[in-house]
Amino acid sequence: MPNLTQYTSYADAQTQCSPAALWALFDGNRNELNIAHECIDRHASAEQAAIILIHADGRDEKLTFREIAEASSRFAHWLQARGIHASDRVAIMLEPSRVFYAALFGAIKLGAVAVPLFTLFGPDGVRARVDDCQPRLLITNAEKAAQTGDVAGVDVIVADASFERELARFPRQFTVKTTADALAIFQYTSGTTRELPEAVKHTQRSIVTLMVAALYGAGLRPGDRFLCPSSPAWGHGLWHGTLAPLALGITTGAYAGKFDAERLLKALHDHAFTNLAAAATHYRMLRISGAAQRYRYHLTKLSFTGEPLDTETAQFVVNNFGIEACSMYGTTEIGVILVSYPGAPDFEVKRGALGKPIPGARVEVQDASGAPCAPGVTGELKVWRHAQWIPTKDLGRIDEAGYFYHAGRADDVIISAGWTMSAVEIEDAMMKHPDVLEAAAIAVPDALRGQVVKAFVVARGGSDAGLAKAIQDQVKNRLSQHEYPRHIEFVRELPKTPAGKLNRKRLREREAAIRESSLPTQ
Image (tube, rainbow, N blue to C red; front, side, top):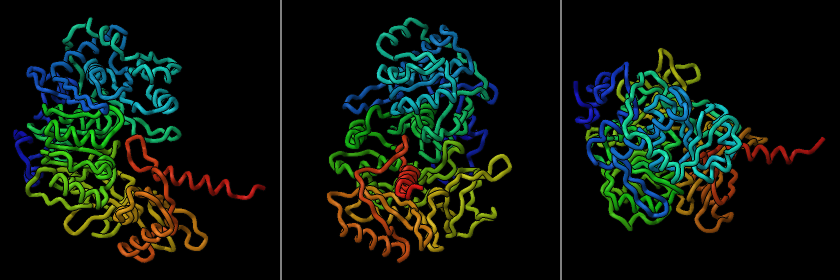
């Protein structure tokens, strides 16, 4: 059986990757498997660092595989002592820390279901998710516990120094025995409180299918020094940023606290990370910080996810790190399906493209009737799963060489006077103006054209009518004379989802509320 980590080329990925080869990367089998064992315990014999914690306050902290293995075993015993059983849910609302990893892997060792929650959720956001998954316990810090203490039927545990001392009383080894099909993790997407997405329920065997994205989306290989600053409350930070590298025995960096671009740049320098996977927003913040040239880097592989990388940021990445950033596209519900194979010497990374399908996947751009679109024609991205085409709810197109391109969410299409326009393309054109730091485009009603484009712009320095016209002219010249924002509003910041993605839905809701309030009362 080939060891997939020994291959780096795109051609080998197509011929060597198979379900059997993916299973061969693990100790477990199709009957018995445990994520905590595969990620932590089997690597615990060496004193290698598993996690390098990059704290926002400037501290660095290293946790070895052995330390996490012992701490998580103690946590599993502690859960047992409290009457927690297999399949019980354990919610964890903590920044990356020793206790966070002890709780995450300890719950999974026991066979309970770990439910990571974003630390910036307010009381309503926490309550909505707790009501949905009904955990037995919620592990958090003192500040958040004060906000969530009224959650009915849930024991809220404060992970402070006394709690860690309590854990230390329990044995540092735990016998793991879970089936591959047992539930292991519930993952929530970054939806709003009002429209809570259903939790995506992952089994223990999910770690095996994850390896496709790890090997070909993030380009992970043993020997990498990997860093992912995304929160482990979200799919990218947990699965691609934490579980995948640890399963391959790779030292991985995690970021704790409020994100600071220069803090991340310094960490890249100080710890000689060679592989960085981040959200597109992170790369933009690195560019805007103006601090990139103060440090030296050892990066050989870069990947991004969440949304397309604007042209100016993509060029910044090449100028400062010497390599192209590779797109990794997927959703929490369907996983990663399009990648750009970081580190593959025979794969051309096309700037602006989502890449090509992962090995063995069928992905198409389809029109409204379900027929494949010709190259250059925009349609909906779909993936073949379980003998049917599954919609991603994203628009896209392909080129003659088989590369896929993103054209925005299906609800981000703007149709004006019969013309179909992409919010993503308009935003990218606006971002090319040197005074535009961030931009968002949405459709607003228009009596003559049905819809027109309204742009929200975060500008460098002041803003005036002259800048608005310059932005409009630039979009006209780059796209077409009809495809430009007829209305521009300058704002201090743009709304983001908790995962850091641009939240156009919030802008549409705001505009709708303004229109409704301006209507005459009866």
